[in-house]
Length: 139
Image (cartoon, rainbow, N blue to C red; front, side, top):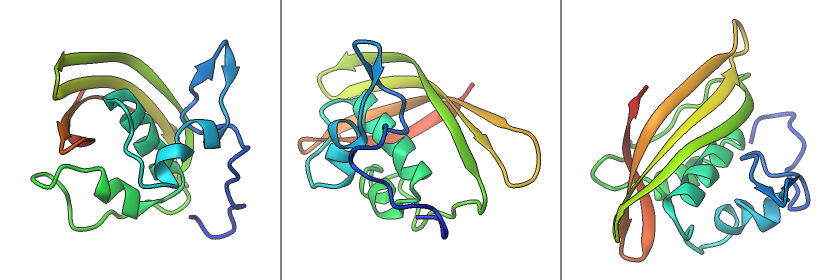
């Protein structure tokens, strides 16, 4: 977690922006269920949302654990001072029982400079009971 950032509480609104009945969902009832436990995310969209939260909270352990071994980097460098501004999930496509894609736009503002949009179509695979991020194409 970034130095000086207040600890994230399970009752805080989840950074992923998921809504339930048009209301924001608490972190503990959303992505916190997977980030704070060993329980796997139930589908590719939930994994993608929890990975966004892991970037917001700078949780390298979760990001690496949820990355498919064949594509996983050895470490993750977080850009200092980045402020994450939001996530929009554009589509979640189940291709078959073990493959899915999620298209999303994540917005961030670097410490210096203008806000940036990260638009990606990500590929996920269900491996040994857990969804894993494989890779993605920038759009």
